[in-house]
Image 1 (cartoon, rainbow, N blue to C red):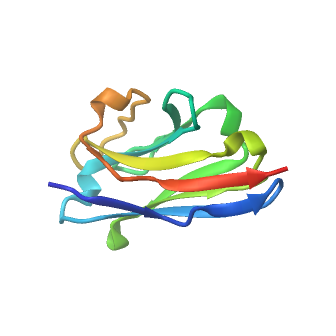
Image 2: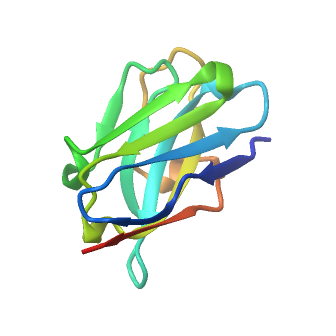
Length: 128
């Protein structure tokens, strides 16, 4: 069982930066690929970024490429989403998710149905 807790959301202005954190419980964090998803009010959940358990593969949705960076610190059981040059259209609830792939895997997925555990989410609001 893995529990995920996000933090770091808030209200910022367009052009600002935020760093979201997702802390995981358990001793097998390094065996999970990690993903970030977001859901804006009235819209479907959207894939944002994913990072393999090995750290060797990162994938991003096109709208955040060059602005967002996903990273992980296995010693702290934490995955981060560094968000720069934020835009009002980035406003959403951001959730992290864990997909068991085994350690040292390069596999990632954009498919939310393949993730095993989810956090509750943290709100990010970007004003214009």
